Amino acid sequence: MREMNMDFSLIASIAAKSGGILYIMPLLLIIVLWVSIERFLFLNRMSRLGEKTASALEQLPDIKEHNLRPLAETAEFPFRALLLVPIRFPNIKDSAQLSEILQEAVMRQVPLLDKRLWLLDTTVTLAPLLGLLGTIIGMFHAFQILNNVANNPTAITGSVAEALMATAAGLVIAIIGLVSFNGLQNQMRFVVHQMETLRSMLINRLSGLDHSHALSSTEAQPVIYVAKEA
Figure 1: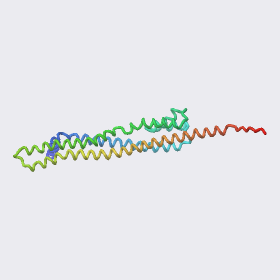
Figure 2 (figure 1 turned 180 degrees about the horizontal axis):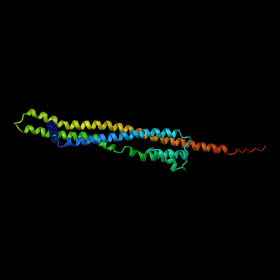
Figure 3 (figure 1 turned 120 degrees about the vertical axis):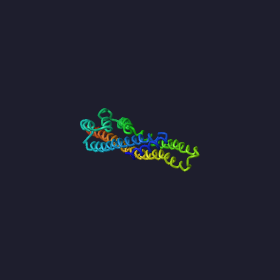
Figure 4 (figure 1 turned 90 degrees about the horizontal axis):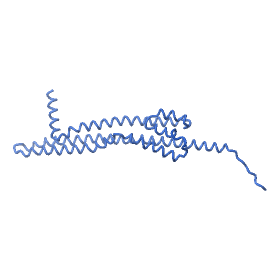
């Protein structure tokens, strides 16, 4: 217990010499770990749902409403929004117009995918700056030792080392946050790619369905031959 009290007193002393900056570092680390774990689990689940939705759509015999509606109702965010577009706008036959509506649905879902990633982006920049600020404050305290002639000049080295701990803590947090941010950005791009793939699948199948209907209606029309007069 006595050793723990001494360790806590040492940590409190170092944190005080950094102007209290080291007290903020654990909070930043918790934010980085929380956002990283929560977004990783969320985006990983979304990627699995995207594969499942694309496979289910590929196995449909056609994309008529009675086949598409059960898939759309069982699908989850963000893929449900795309599957509901042909059901909500059944009268749209132009593939270009349908593509624009589907693109609108994709754009509305993307901000919900990168939610809270701004916290990681901010922490990656903020943690080293706060660490540098804590080190500068610690250096001010360290150089005050030289003002007292009774102090040994070599005693400043220990204070400088303690001051540099703020910068080290900020860099460690920034490295963890940067790796997590880049990994989550890559995961988010993969989910967006799945949404774009699903959008293309819907357009191609609906366009092919309309084309087949047009061909069948053309074949059903009788062909009238007009004899030329001699």
